[in-house]
Length: 371
Ligand code: UDP
Image (cartoon, rainbow, N blue to C red; front, side):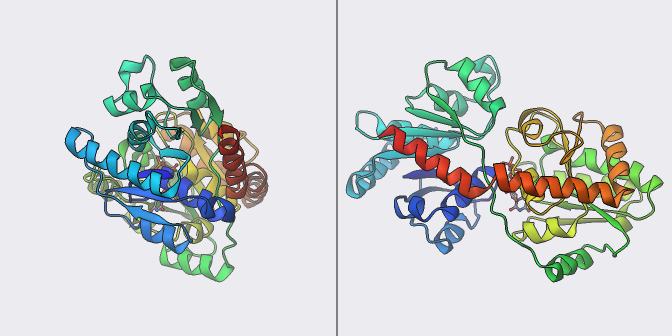
């Protein structure tokens, strides 16, 4: 039984969809309980993929009576369905999973999508609770997130589970149609940044770098794909638009808001940028772009440094530095053969090391070992 908080799509939700979509066995043996946060279409998308979903109105953790009744409901459901393993997809669901499994034969698994700060008190209350609560297995999404939890909770069994992506083949026609929609011609170079709009994701660094690239590369065009999710920082969008206007970049820039056709949009781009200001725990968008055969310029540290080898599938640049980002964008923007070489290397790596079928196989193996 996977427990999932929000219905809006971010990396953790994509991981869940990808794992279940890639394995018939995992789907057959699983159900997903969503706890009713957000207004996204995750339940719909999971059901479309053939996954059984039970929607529960979970309630906030600061309402203990509501939490107790949700845990009772989940426990009844688990008993009826003979659930042997409860899996929390992220910190908030993990608190429920822990409470749910306490005093039962059910095993608790925590899928971790974050890098814990050290010492422990520097993390949010829910993150601390999730990590201290009883857990039989913790699945970390990168070596960086694994190292931090291993230091903070040395007794917990931790395994590495790299997220995986499907490898959809986007038709040339679909990619060209998106490219036209984004206002980029055949001879132009389209740079894209994908992800939820939040300051730590650094889309503003992309805008500053774009201003420098635009001066040096006449053909450069730019797109930002993503919107505010989970109600976080809804004003950032307007801030970015104002800055783009101030820099006179409007004719070359498109902001699409949240989209569900990510593979097509990525295939429409020539170079993908990933601009997080702090160490990204993994970075799904990086492997999604690689799966589309696109080179990626990412900020070093955390997941990106484990995914990309500098100079092979893309470039690694220091976080928060428009100058370094602009230099790498210029280098790739001027050299189509370099883009092709890096894109091909990325596609091969996505297929060999970060496919969703590989992730599902590993997940099933880890869960089997628990029984
Ligand atoms: N995403 C999406 N639509 C958007 C922007 C992002 O579906 O408009 C997806 C993206 O394809 C990826 C996920 O959201 O699968 C973001 O995952 P990532 O690990 O990059 O970041 P997180 O949100 O987990 O910090």
